Image 1 (cartoon, one colour):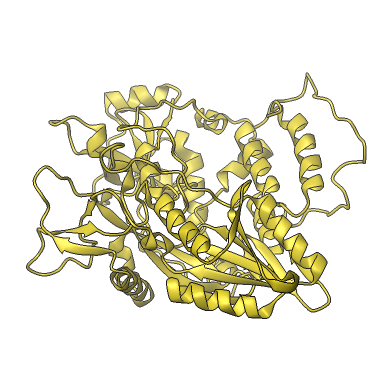
Image 2 (image 1 turned 120 degrees about the vertical axis):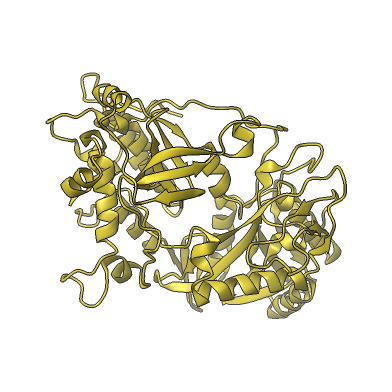
Length: 520
């Protein structure tokens, strides 16, 4: 299949790793005899994968160049070659033969009929050279940045400078060779684009479940009195908006709900004009572990609340205008824009605006804020009664020793904000919780299973401890250097297993020696 992909469009063999990735991506979403009446992706995730974004490997693609990356008379698009999808974001991966760069972008138009002429003189010269690929992910990072999490930007900046990244170690494999590939490189090749969330509005609006999710988001925005339709004042610029789609999973890995979020393109905001302060605190994992431990020691129940569209509750101090969202442009008023009364996801100041609002609420209700952890609030009642609340963006967990205080707090929150009562805490930030009158049991089974699958270790032999107690490891000065990028991925994944800090440290120390990464 890989050979055919390269042959049909005459793609040079130097791109065989990309063909392998795209081939596996397709096979995981294709019928197979191994799994009856479903694809491997459906068997794993429990939902039918979308395939309408599939394109012919090696076809022509035209990538939009953002306004901030081109001059007035520069072309608005670049002619590239389609190589599959990004391993790190919901976007396409393309190759620009003119600049010899890999580009990650969502804004792409495809021409699957035309074939790139790889036999011309310029392309031939490039084939004969080692392909020095430089990732140009700035545009993609802006489109796919974690806009649903708080932004802690503290450095004012009105523009983003161009960055030329050092070529990753795995790109060395773009030199055609008959040498066997290392096991670590193989792991990198199989880091696949595993989910099937829609990437564009054009894809999503065709499916009823996603259309319903978008309708719910617009209804939530309007119920909250977030904006008003108006003309754009002279001298003002409106900010674009886009849809972001995500299937939220439960602790068993099944689909819990389909979520569509309308997000402002906050990266176009200018410091001092569109926003001033952006910092908002987020609960540390150590704090969350402390609350869980305290509840377990005292046999306290732990409850969970979710604030619907939390950032929409934050009041804005600046005048901000946004475009009408795709699919919801009012007929006859196409030239109008929305003036925001409250924050919208994606705005630089949205996290701070939301935190200021929720912080003021807790102060009004008589809660005391921890001076060392500004997302931890406590309320002391009569006769030693206590209520503890921990906030992580729009998710709250609360515990204590008095059910009356629980009920009063929950009713007060629901009167102040639009909430979802999730009942007893069972899944929070990757932590699974099983509560009973006798004990509270916490685990990260689903998360551990996910990282084992990601790094192809589902069938590994388990051991009680990763190393002998007290064993001191030293770096092998003559050892073969392996993929440091892969090490960092594994390292970060292990450190996220927050329930066994001693084990995480032992594994990190042993892997640090193997991958020759200096201590942080």
